[in-house]
Image (cartoon, rainbow, N blue to C red; front, side, top):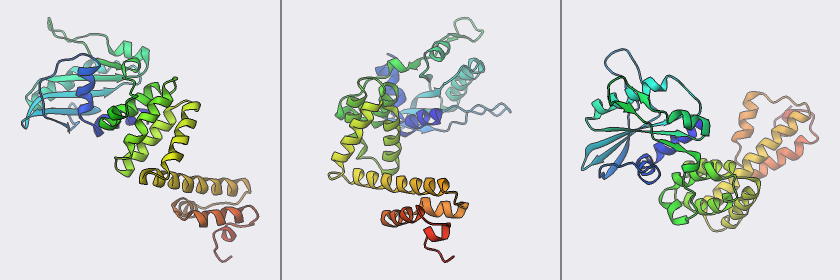
Length: 283
């Protein structure tokens, strides 16, 4: 899940890979006017199959100028010494432009391993992977910066949310989520919340209460959160009282969006002897 979350941040903002390479790792890139996610299938005509985590194509006036392979690496994998060079040469051939690599490795030991030069076997042909370490990820505390690049703000929270700067990062990122579609906003809020230390979480919850009467996003999110909490509480009470809940009934409870009905069910669950008595079904 952690791997997929990091991959999604780079998919949702294709230019993020290029921005990190230039702004954080000091790489030089050609001028480009567009960044798009390309196919991750780097398979050649021969049977060998290679699939990168994210492939970002930078274009200038519609023409490819650089392809960037983004790899999220959470553990050591000796196969990468062979597949990373293959990713670069195959993608370079596919898109007919120079290819680059960005390895995202939050764990310090894994990052050190990823950064080791890879000798290809041809004199002068050595791959030195650029590695984005946890400590290299920018601390985003400027709301304007978070609004411009919400994915970088979320990445910042994931890297630094448990530090004393967690609450400041959260206060910068939270307003940026309001401009996103509901699904992405909820996903990013979950990532933000679970990346923070306890004090920062309380601060974020307080901020959400303040937003409740100001933004549609907060109203939807807080209301939905309460509904989900009530549904989970109902299932917990039924389990504790030894009342079996078939899968169909469980799905019905979790799908229920009426908070008043869930509250009635929860009250009945405290004394009911059967599930039918709780869900208003004839026994």
